[in-house]
Image 1 (cartoon, protein in one colour):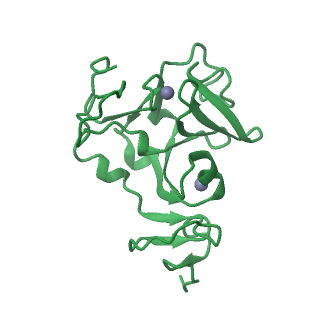
Image 2: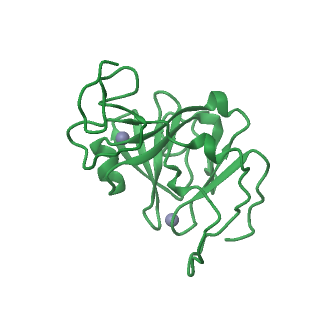
Length: 197
Ligand SMILES: [Zn+2]
Ligand SMILES: [Zn+2]
């Protein structure tokens, strides 16, 4: 799929493992559109991604568009994804009427979540297109790679959430850690011991 998309300034592209499901993040209003960047250790993220924790971005509805585009849109933003999302998206309703997990219909890559209640996307930025450091032979989906240099650092996670007793590893990285969401749950140290605040 190389060369099918032109990267515009202020846009970041991402794609699944097979390259059939792609998305674009419009970064022109990132200050307002990016509402969270964290490592999430909740057991739902662990199971969906098959990983001890996952890097999670929360983005407001207008910032993310999918390719291929939806055939027809059921409201703007769509309350439920069935008719509002790309035909290449497979959905799993994880919280009835509120949240849907999104995967590529062909390769099954987990891509994120639609929160219909808050009109927000979760994007797992492990799927963002970046220039590979080694040759990735056999990879169908390569490029575009010219991500604006100032944008990737802005996506960096700045804390850990749901860092409770269910986590499967301790992380010694100096970032703040919380048992639930940041600032509204118990703050803990790298080994999960409660801190004053
Ligand atoms: Zn795929
Ligand atoms: Zn989670």
